[in-house]
Length: 210
Image 1 (cartoon, rainbow, N blue to C red):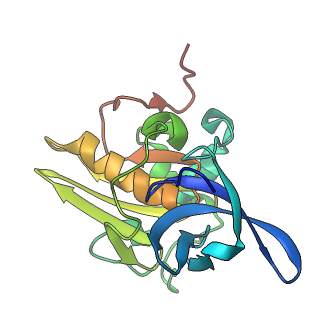
Image 2 (image 1 turned 180 degrees about the vertical axis):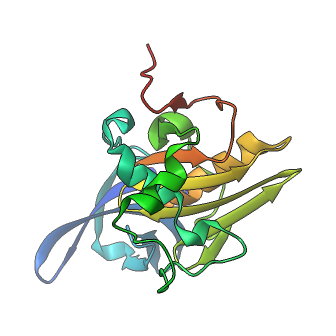
């Protein structure tokens, strides 16, 4: 295959089996004498033996998502009050005494705070990450990161990552770490809640950058 990709790089790999040519897009996990292991979109490792490999090409580290400013604010607000984002009550399933998740009460709790959004591809750039996919993962589709005095928790729902941030001296690094975690899980856009100042690389929802 000529020059080989590097671990962490996202590639499209052409290979073949007894059914003919195939293609798989994912992150290079490792290379050893038996073959190349790729992480697919579910982060499941796939070992492909060297004799089956034909060619590879680099693809964007984070695929470009839809315009985050075109998202439905009500849906963003509902994601922002997901219980998994709260350290004291990680249960994502509403109980009998909770407000109706399809009604206005739940969404209203997130509608009054600053919602800042970004495309993950713009935020993270095209560099091959050194952060591993499992870093900061806390299970159940969640992640948590604490650096300095800043603390953040994140979830991914569809193409959206939501980060709830307690601001601090390393807030930008916390958001970047959780954004990378989300990108590995096939998110395209990210919203940040809980921070009253606009972070670098983000725009306030409803205000398009020029």
